[in-house]
Image 1 (cartoon, rainbow, N blue to C red):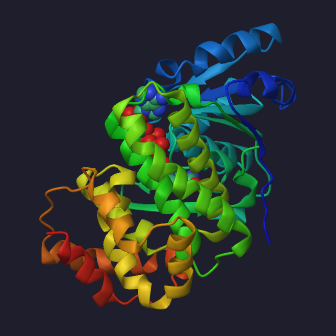
Image 2 (image 1 turned 180 degrees about the horizontal axis):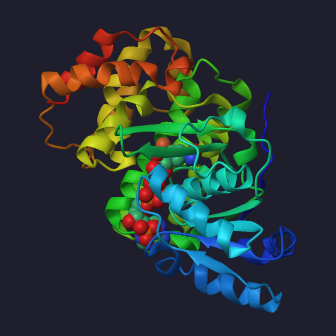
Length: 362
Ligand code: NAP
Ligand code: FE
């Protein structure tokens, strides 16, 4: 089964083509974004005239930080409630997109002051249009909002079909302003999602052509985008791959790979894509005996071997100096084991598997 309720616009005219649908989402949008991305990407400058042309007043909440916290979501939700806005337009990487999804849900369901927020408490939400400015998370077409609880230091995904954006407005020009570090890390996040579409025990052969095309696009275009950041064709191919990754994980979920990465982000500030990248080779190693036909077919379809793939990955600066103490590792094992994504692994992952991967990062 595939469920994909977001209307997707892709390419240089995405906003123009989406205009009629965007305007019909409500009367006054709240634009949700980070400090700079909406402006740097050029998306805000293109959106404002569209809203003006349609006589739509708007409000802006631009305080979403990377790896957004529940505190920020609550602050944004209060802002949304006071603003009289009736729909949201999120502009940015996965962080503003995810924050906007949760802000909409908790405001619509009067849960702003609620401590324990679970998807069963949501019955409706505000419509959301997502305008990605990174080519990574695919959040523009997923039902997930990944948030950090500052009090526990736990980062976790919240998933509900209500959170799917109504519109995904994907214009690769908005990624031209990304620096090389963010270009690399977000592409590795997209690559992880595509691979996790195969790793996951919810894998669906119907998605394999998208997964293959997405991985192929990243392998062929990432270096081009890093060497020539203004190459719009390479940016387009990377954004398409990220979109395919989002479509994929919306169906299959993510796996151990993401569960291992979350603590590295919350405790050491390692960016999301990099946290996936540093564990990727070891995760493939662990999964391979359980997924030989699937992974061999994938590599065959890409006309490469597993070794070629690993050598390609080695070309990129995806290493960090990490001294994980035994105490830290032991404290995180139960958290990793309890994360939702662990239900999707192709084998029963043990505490020892997790311990081994973390120890090897030293
Ligand atoms: P991000 O945290 O949204 O942004 C990273 C940095 O890139 C920020 O400093 C941001 O600036 C900047 N930036 C974004 N677009 C830019 C542009 N066009 N030009 C210049 N700078 C730009 O990064 P992300 O990797 O896209 O998102 C990561 C988050 O998404 C994590 O919390 C991760 O867990 C989550 N995620 C969600 C899903 C899902 O399905 N929902 C899937 C995977 C990951 P500003 O601070 O100004 O915005
Ligand atoms: Fe991710």
